[in-house]
Amino acid sequence: MEFEQLKLSNQLCFPVYAASRLITREYKPYLDKLGITYPQYLVLMVLWETDGLTVVEIAHKLILNTNTITPLLKRMESQGILTRTRSGADERKVIVSLTEKGREMRIQAATIPEELVKNLKTDSLKVEDLITLRSTLNNLIDFLIEKDGNF
Image (cartoon, rainbow, N blue to C red; front, side, top):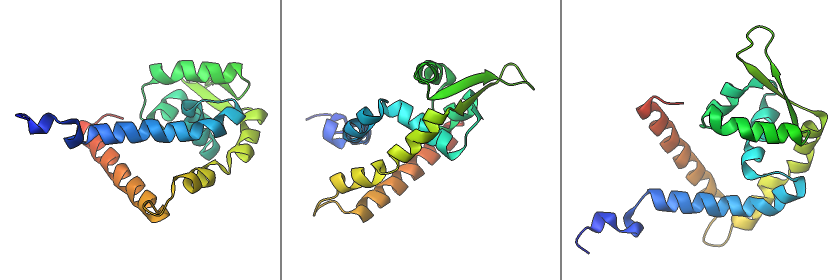
């Protein structure tokens, strides 16, 4: 091939993209039991860590734009998982809080990470490899955020 740099197998972006899609697929059976999607699971993890965040804070933690996250939050509110209320101090801010149902889902979801790792580890892929991969990807994410000055 004349342009070796354009081969799919030589790209960084493709294995990251494919791995993301395939790992998300691995989550699906667990999340189906909870009646949520993977993006909703991410929102819940943020709120389980710190409840009562603004939409902007959640979007920042998930490295998303607010216009991406708002429809997701609306769906979760209609499912009774969370509430969205205007801040008394600043009406431009919307505070997102878990409902009792949303807090209870944390207990149901607590085994998901362990189950997922059990399903991913093999003789050729060990838990230590997954931890190293996560650390490397986090370093890449931090670099790209800092480089672009966004999020």
